[in-house]
Length: 88
Image 1 (tube, rainbow, N blue to C red):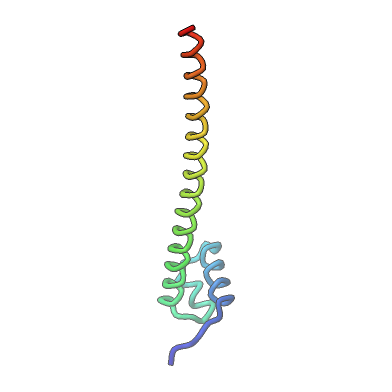
Image 2 (tube, rainbow, N blue to C red; image 1 turned 45 degrees about the vertical axis):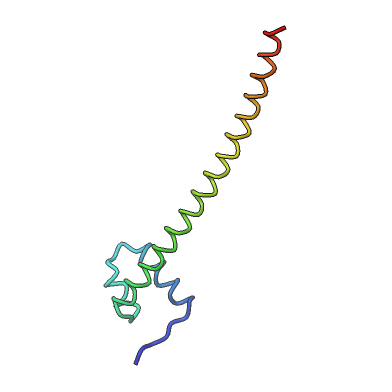
């Protein structure tokens, strides 16, 4: 029969495995869970972290793009003003 674990139990097990200097298999044995279960949770956590990191990087890049676009508009406007002054 498959045992059910709460999200809190999963999170605590993953944190313990990540912070511990022990192998995941040893941490799983200490917690009396299957090593394959802990490995699956670790994989899910890694995937979640990667997804969060990608979203963070994407937001930062979008901010930077908007900033560069604004800077470009200012420079183009300055260039137009300078061109008008030179033409006079």
